[in-house]
Length: 145
Image 1 (tube, helix red, strand yellow):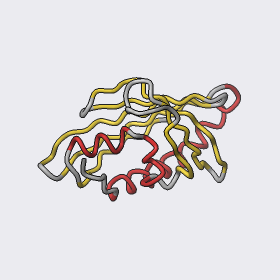
Image 2: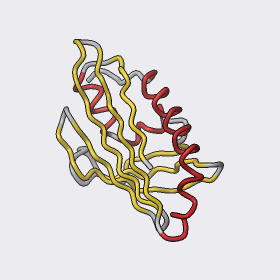
Image 3: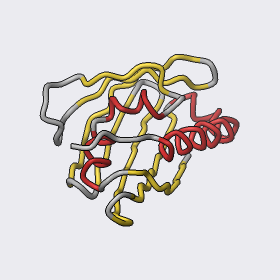
Image 4: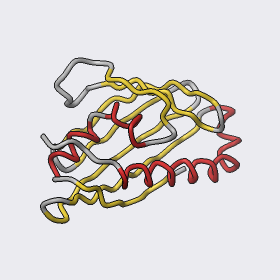
């Protein structure tokens, strides 16, 4: 399953990048994330891990995301794998003007094993979850560095 959305975020490109690359911020803007914390020490860079608890169809799903690509301030890629799913999230950033950044969020969720059979049924729920996250992302206000 794949979800792609581009939204405008109020904030300068480096500030928006730093805020979203610190993926523990997902708890602030994504209503599908119940808890999030950084799992490794600063600075945020390639290899940094984040422990999240996602809520999907009413279930709390713990996931550890790791930054697998880090190109400040243009792109960050995060990967999480559990026994039943693999999530690859690519976030790209582009300056619109001095106070606005375009953010494209590309999420690919692949189920493993027996869970793969349910994937077609779960795609609608995945889209709704993505739409809520995109709305939250569009309304977030990253702090200025």
